[in-house]
Length: 499
Image (cartoon, rainbow, N blue to C red; front, side):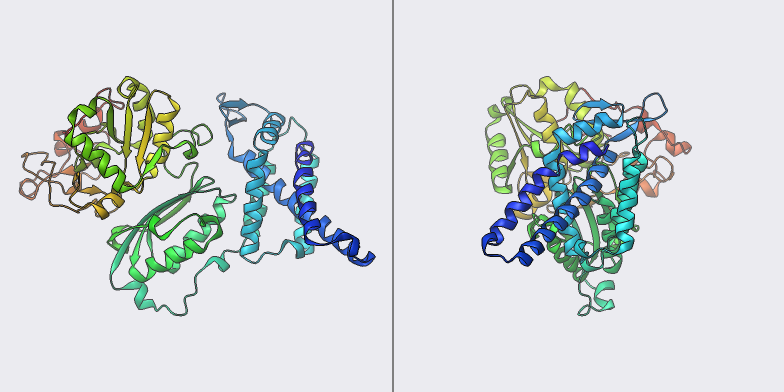
């Protein structure tokens, strides 16, 4: 295993040497100064090598999956299955060297930010690193590298301190964090996170300190979250996020705000996942970097306006809603194609089974906040059947901020206890039982199947509080609603769906 780590240290070492030469005139240095500079260079190279070994181990560990035989493990990367440690190490060294170098650089920047000086590690730290190196040296190619990867991960996370990433709370009172105007934030950021466990721990501490509730997903590919609290807490959260070096690409406009608060969520849930939006496709195979062309809300509005005013353009262009059926049921763009799918992880199969629908077409995609379009448009583009794929930057949320009476009619579904937010007065859906206009979701009263139900006040008063006749008669985990719905529909809807 060590032989693959020693290959890539040389190039960064040369880069570090070049940087040192630019910083000083070697010829003018005294012997003592030259010796000191050489020692600093050697220390810097040693620091980089240690950091890169840890990142390399974490990278390999992130590709690990259980073997189909049920025993042992394999490593999945770039569409290939590697059955032994030597194979995945060779692949990572040759194909992902630049990425690992970037992850290492980011990791060192993060450690510098929170005050961990690698130049002054304690004897205990050095001993831990030496122990890890010894364990690596004694691994043979037939051994299980998972323990080494785990050790590396613990080493990084165990030495990290997130306190320096926390905001200054001296000017904020407990009253400001627990009462007053409530806000819900929706955001995401695709970026390289070398240690998602560390970011997850920081997010947990940050949200708890600011009295925020909600859901935050963290992965090596970035962060995705929606949190609620007071205006003061939400503002501090945004400021803290924007100051963090890992999220330097984010701007204030990347946070979508709506009226709400901590009561919109049942609690706080922060976790590390493989994807920050669960599409069910390896991010290495379909990356957000291959996403469609982003259109600002004004540009998207003009495109939809052209479709509405010139129906003949619909033969060449598809306006695609990549949300779930219960979202598009209560609100959607005019002339859209709304797949009848129950979750986003079904979207890739939907695309695969409906390729002819997209063949030689321009596709305009949209979702709630933009994140599903990042991966969804990349997947659609990977099929190479469309003329071009565009996506609404910031999603419907940002569009409605600028065009509340535009071409999106009805409510915007949100994944919290509010279920929906309104920007216009249109009601495009109906009650499940009496077919009167209605768009306020409640959960099926059985509390077992978990389905969302559109049942108006009058029908609920009459006892019609379940999602279907089966649930109305007896509680079932899988009721008529789920059994009768095809997992992957081969048809589409351009009007509101029926439940």
